[in-house]
Amino acid sequence: MSTPPRNVPRFLPTLTQVVRPPETAQESRLSPLDTEQMIHRVLQRVDLALEPMLREAIGPLVLDQITAMATRLRPEVEAVVRQAVADALAHEFDIEKRPCD
Image (cartoon, rainbow, N blue to C red; front, side, top):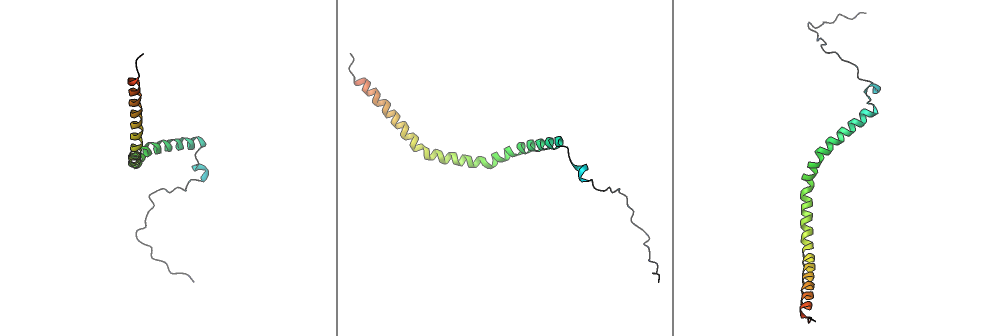
């Protein structure tokens, strides 16, 4: 029992690109020095990109905290300044009241 011949298409696709097998794991491994250099370069790039992003993200939060802290500290600072001025004036009045010998 033979199968009847199949009709072969008139135009067959032609392979025009060379296909290479994937690299083996050993071929694709970087040396430890190359890996360290790559890590260093990546960290430098991350550092350069991260700093402005953090400033933009955190800056408004820090400003809000400073403003809130200043608002809470103002009465304390005023009280300390008033006390220092009162003490200084009291000291000056004591000096003026003393008789000169």
